[in-house]
Image (cartoon, rainbow, N blue to C red; front, top):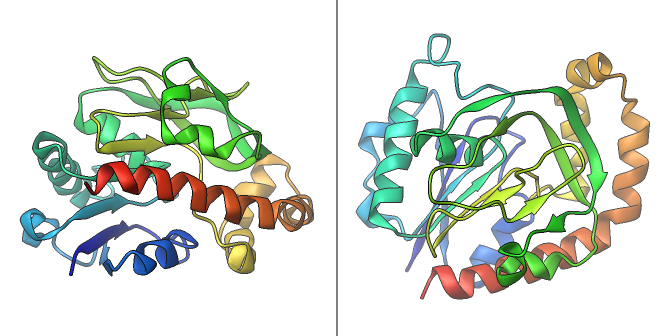
Length: 232
């Protein structure tokens, strides 16, 4: 049986609606808990798909969270192997950092729902499966593009919403994985950030209710197409 290993930084920022898609494809889904489990103990050779999830910390928080150094090293190993790798939000930023690119604050929070605008390069990827579906954005940092990569998608706030270091790796700044049925956990867990940004939880709750079915369908299309290529 093939194995998918997700590096998780915060309990409720899990695989969400991605997990059933992976299980339907016969993958055994496991979690590695950042700050608890040893990154140096991960056997990447036994991992068919590595997924690096999101979280509220910065990639430059090594002094506060020393294990980030080991995590970036593990991600670099995975990138060097050119085996399947998916990074979401913080995960995409860690991928960029592992490839030597800077990650820095945008000066503004991008929190809410908005569609992506695909670049010419992005129109040749699985991202086309999102169509005009608004997706969830929730970040204050942005990654610069690693050398040799191109931006695949943009928004008005963030010029780099996705990049692909190689044919089987994809970094996504946005959050396609959030389970609408458990979105309330996000609102509870990030309430301080929302208040600081001047965003009422009710605004996001209402927006998610309106986008839930479209998001789930778009995620299945996106992941289906990407997994077809990545797991060849």
